[in-house]
Length: 562
DNA sequence: GCCGTTTTCGGCCCGACTGTTTTCAGTCG
Image (cartoon, rainbow, N blue to C red; front, top):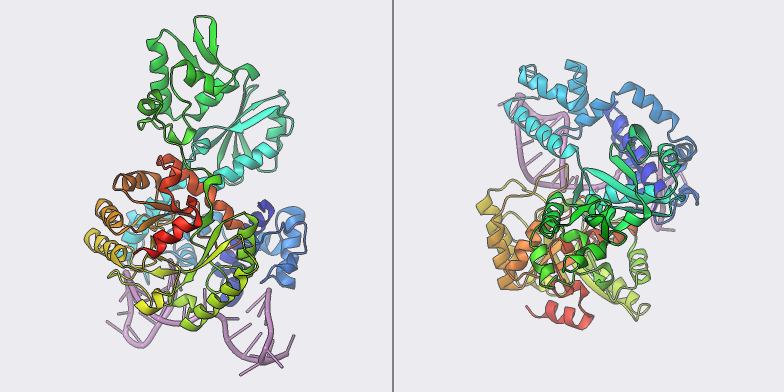
């Protein structure tokens, strides 16, 4: 949805950054950021409607967007790009470095990339610079390291989007699909693998696409490119008769394939991307299912292919019936423009109904997240609006909830008599990320023990590529969640992907239940649930483990039973 | 640069934290 919207939003965001770095007025910077967010979250394709219908877009920004749609950039953006080197903007991606400090370092020391900054610190060139003490240097180095270790990978949302875009751009293919870690729904992706059956001219079609920045290698059967987003995409042509074995081979994981080939070798067979063979005889090749069946095991869903017990289970016929997108009956964590969402209550509810949900919770932020300016009056007024809306949606139960803030001591916003008025309370950590493991563990356990808290939202608070997970003794937290019946969230927002699948699997062993939530701040975000389902599948979850697959009555029983 | 039943001008998300300063600027959520 809305690829053009995302591209235009990215350009405006870049312009906002550059405008801030060149001393632009802070309110104007915010206007560009606000417009970018609104465009990205706008449900209609802005190349098909007048962009002026998007709130926060006036005449000046509309002109810029229109020029961008014409030629992929706009005059003012070009001008600022010429003033600020790319690497200087990259400096602001280092945690603790904003536009002011980045530009200061560039002007004072000519530092024009994170690498140059690391070198400068190593050589002691920052010593004595105004505003940069030893603590700052330490934090910057930590930030650069974080950037370096995550910089090569993108989150699944970016990769999936790209994979779908590549597939849609090659209509000449008879068959085309993505394999690799995207198909396995891994939370971060190194490169995108696409397999196709079709004419050789497909390779030329591929190289000519506008998303291609550089062709790394190109032959008759395989072409590798780097896209404008900096992601490597490999396209392979495979024989139609080998489609299944090629998909199997290129889906991986490496560990899974090693085990599978070992099983073949033991029977005197050979498995390659061209098929499963006994001598010259083809045992299976066209369909992936046939390969697994020939080995006497169930077909293994790609998210389980990590050599994490799937062979043992598949040989016994005991693979779990994994939760699917179609199983989900509702969303339990969403926002509106009452706090930091960009769509109105009415728009979000209508979009939820259009998705066919049986229930839908509105969970805007609570007063302790001061920047959201939530008040008791605003919250109660929203509840009234929601109750009135309910009449228009007889098939969908509307739940009035909130996303509470878990304070450093584990307490949450609002007194008990207010909390008891909500249908559902999600509680999440939004600050004080660097508490010690002991303090953080106590904080989460206290939140679980709060009788009004139903769900712990985005538990590790990580942001892929930006912020590491908080440190807690998760076994203790999960035991507390299981004991108190507190649901743990799988936040499906792809840069959060939180809980991550390895922790979900661990939590499940403690008997914890989960909710897969979009944490949507706009209408298009509601579609992110599929990424949460990927996490759940990688963690072996069934529908029963996920409370928002439950029928509404069973869910309400759980929420009311504290 | 956007927006408006309190305004077509004068506001705009506001407070905490950090590391540095010696009263505060920059960053973050």
